[in-house]
Length: 581
Image (tube, rainbow, N blue to C red; front, top):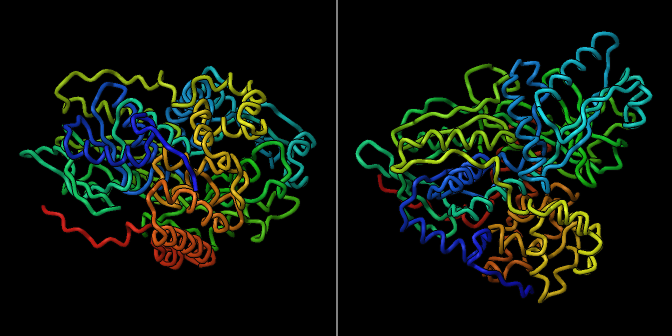
């Protein structure tokens, strides 16, 4: 049992006491804005508004980053393929944001990543791609990463011996970045909380408050307890991603745009299955395929197909997985097989509808619209441009706020953990000696928590066993599990195994073997009795079983039915609460 304690007065700690206090504040205070949605755009909007001096509340029906923002390709990038679609403004904007995160906002989370683009045609392809990559580098302005470099076939094979010699004629190397999307989203949320935003998960919007013809807040339900509260505000921002249309319908107002969900599937394979010193980007008939290093693994994806089923349960199918394997095996000397796959995840991109019948051709530009007086909706865009989207959303509510609203300043606001990160990286040996950990462990913790590392490890001062690794997931320390609850708002086993850590995609058992150990560790922190602890473990095991089974199904309908059959938490078993009009 853990002896960890926590300080409820620290604004960036989103633990159980913070949650209790937040519920009281939501129902008693007057806010300037309520943000609906705890994905990257929602938490980014909360941060933008809070740092402008506004009183902000954010509510999320499930968990921070539980939707799209934990299931991306794990990159901060400009979107090389959008150059071919002539979306130069979008690429320039995204590259500017990439540079800002690398250099200032989140250097502990966003890392430079070399890519190899294998050339497959003689003659036209090299100058064509060289021109595109020159434009890509140029649009980024001042950069924290090197520009393109051309290599011969032999040079490309030295970088990536895993590639078939006859599958390429040469190559071009360039740089983008990699990020743990779920951890980054959580860090943005905690930074918003540090600047005064009230952040609350498992808090579902069930209706809207009105004064005359104007939206004046939201009615919410605590999905853990069933309690109802009303949050009063001058305006509401709908930043719910693929749920945008549902929230707009709940407001009984006609939306100004529609959001179309596009499913993207990725597989995760061990690092030794693909021998390469860099990430690889491959062209496909429909889009591009990324092969991205992820510590001891590779992430390979993605697909791009319409999704019209349960938005909470996007499911990978056998066809999705086979598509990825076929595309990547076209260039690999040693083909990947189903047996190599240790993780699979599926996510939904919120694309603006109406521009094309093919989701891969839909714009990644975002849109902001006034749905009703006092209510703004924002949708579309890319993970990389979340900060720009957030600023645009807050700019759109200024007429509803009774005081002057300052301009956005988030370009100058580092995320928590960023300050001092570079110096601490140079002190890994000393930090390791201080905490009794190998420098490798320290470096890994720094790349997950940055300068908050002392806060994380402080919970092990009274219980040295927390510095030990999890038995069946030794990449992670037991103290990280504790920290997920006391500082990072984790309420359920899935929150910890799928998002605060990435055990659910990084281990062949998908976290099944460590579920009981993790549950026992956090039970006293979340006041779980033996029955609740057992229920959490059984629910997680059922979730994993349903996902694995869905990945054997031939189509989306069959896979979705299996995935949706497993409840995600006790909250899904609550009886519906009647909501007055």
